[in-house]
Image (cartoon, rainbow, N blue to C red; front, side, top):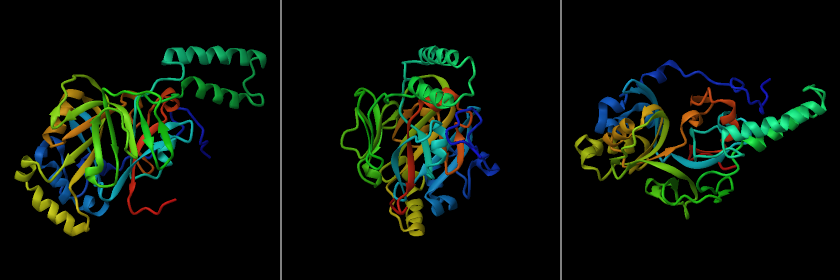
Amino acid sequence: MTNPNAVGRYSDPMSRLPPEYLSAGRGNPAPRMTSNRAAFFPTVLRNDLFRRDGILFGFEFVRHLPVHWAVVDPGRHAMYVWQKVHRSYPRSALDLGASLFTNGPFTNYGDGDLVRSTTSFVADLLPLLYRRGGNPSGPGFGSHVREMSIRHFQAPAPLGFVLGSREGIHETTISRPNIFYFGRRGFEFDDYRINRGDPSDESEAIGGLFGGVRDYEPYTVNHLNRVGYWCLAPLTDDPLLVRQGVGPALSSYETATGVPCRGLLMAVAGWANTQCLSHLLSAIRVRDAAQIDGGDSLLMGSGRTLRQGALMPEWKRLLQRWGVEFRPRDEPSG
């Protein structure tokens, strides 16, 4: 039986990706960012699985580097902020039962950075072992170690505002008004925002994010890393999308689903050159994109499947606490 508080690198149940997830978008027609460019979102709207589910996952190589993506119709799935309930961050994400989840804001360790946190943890651990004669199997030892690991490694606060009315999350310790947030005020596409500043009247939002694309202009930061973005793509007033047939694609989608659609949301996560990826997002007609925490903190998945984060190291599983999830809008409350 799996221990829900396990922290080890391979302790969480990790579902393997079905083979069909490793060939651009699933279903028919299959969207591909790198070849469709401005036709990407019209192709998504015509995809049979997207029409069925209101969400579509894909995988492709961008400049020879692996990237996962997911496109969401906010008319059928709503964004919420989540907070982990287990010590292990990926385990908590897998227990959400979400249509889509990612990690969220940047954070610092309990003692400031990994070196200080590790040093402080060892300094607390050694006297505990000494008092027990070096025996780690005595009563209460495990609970003491778990409490110490949380105290030293878990983030005390996000580096930016995090608001979640659904879960009663209100983290406003650290203001970062010069960078960006991703959030929503209501449920429709026009209620979603990627703006500079701290979120204020949004019901669900994560702040302290870096810029990726702003009003279709890609950022020029050139950095190779494991990165993730949340993106907004309006569909109804973009001349380039109009030339790619977005009007008929929207009409057909709305007829098939009965759901009006003014725009789509997108999550992107994987290894990438940030400059190349932000330029690609602009090319597929993402208007705005904000960068979530990356590197070993990057997490993306749905249901019981992880697309990014299966090998997250132990200290990051302890560090991270907050993230973004999408759930069906017709899901029963409670």
